[in-house]
Image (cartoon, rainbow, N blue to C red):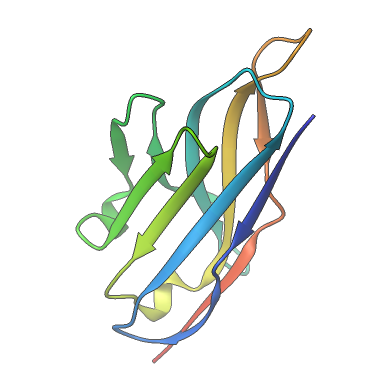
Length: 120
């Protein structure tokens, strides 16, 4: 089993910055793609950014130029640097990872989420 734990959320004023972290733990052979998703009240969960094991990235249009996703494969960590935050970025942010574990094929895992609130 793989556990994903997010941290770094909080309350920030518009224009401010936050850095989210996601720590993966458990018996893991390899982690393939990792990503950040978010869900605002009354809305569906949406993709924010993804990063492949080799480092290639993709972003939602709404965060391009403001957010940067990165990962440290040696530590099984992923990060999301969020700059120039806007009130519409307010949401619960979830960590997502596809991981290879013993005696099973690749599976997708989710963290519990961390709240990000941007005040105007």
